[in-house]
Amino acid sequence: MIRIFPLIFVLLWSSAFITTKPLIDNSDPFSALAFRFSIVTLGFLIFSLYSNQRILIDKKKFIESFFSGVLFHGIYLGGVFYSISIGMPTGIAALIVTLQPILTNALSGPILKEKVTYKQWIGVLLGFSGAALVLGFDIGSKIPLLGLVATIIALIAITSSTIWQKKLSNNLPLSVSNMYQALGGVTFHIIIIIFFAKPYINFSQSFIIAMSHQIFLVSFGAFTILMYLIKNNSASKTVSIFFLIPTTSALMAWLFLNENLTTLDIFGFLITTLGVYIATRD
Image 1: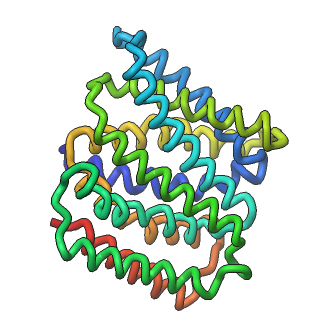
Image 2: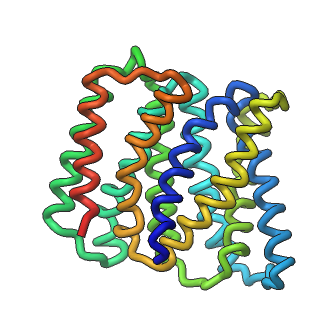
């Protein structure tokens, strides 16, 4: 594993929570994501053709990558974007979905046959205790209930996608696999738009800048790094880097979005971060 990759990933992934706000201020969440992953699909297609990768694959490999994209780019990101669009604070949304490491560790034993230690279970208890401390006093006031539900669904989706991706053994080139995953994401969001959403996009300067950031730095950059790490490491070790994301995202939200954190929120963040660290360290 290239040592610098995890640090780059944490910074890029955390910044995605910050540029989500300008996007949903200028569009509905699902139109923004459909637009984003249309460009991402095209980008990975061009790169795959340029690098002479075989893009016509068998049905099994296509379904595996497509379904992974539905989970990750569709349900996960759709849940995060929607929750923030209806008032979920960015930092708390980041906290909830980055409980992924402790869920992944809890499930990687029975599903991936990876060893799960007692320290990981202690981390699970601490992680959820910290989240409950933050959420328990904020639901209904600072945290919209529907936003909480959407974020929990997103958490389940990203955990399932990580485990699903680790179980795959199709050995597709990253650019080809990422292309079909992006296609799964855009298909999911188009279906949501057709049946449930009223699409609109205001191509303002802030929208274009935020969208460019999410396409090039997050989808092409951070996501490719994540797929590389999952492919070359155990699922539990890969997601260990996620314990840095809640604090990084909260700090970025404080710096760039003027989101306030109470003493109780900070205490909950610290407990959760400690729990995730204990659950995922060697």
